[in-house]
Image (cartoon, rainbow, N blue to C red):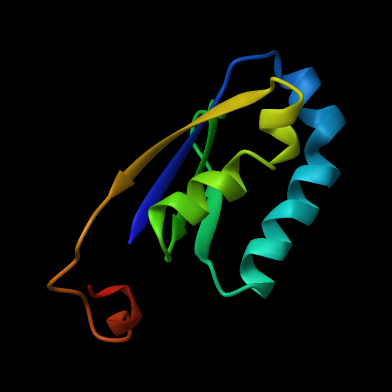
Length: 94
């Protein structure tokens, strides 16, 4: 499991201008079976995505996010191996 922590490095107005393209990119991640969950950080300083797959492939995918391409945000990627999960979340286990 990969935890993708996205942090804005540009003003929110810039993020808002590229949000539609970013959300298209997010939908592609779900369509490809890579993303399991995603959403905004609170307060709104970026976002978090739960992803699966080879780290190098996910890193390459993150580089294609319009937020990264346009200098809006950067990613920190943490790899985790969940061994215990609540019922219904078995797909998160390593």
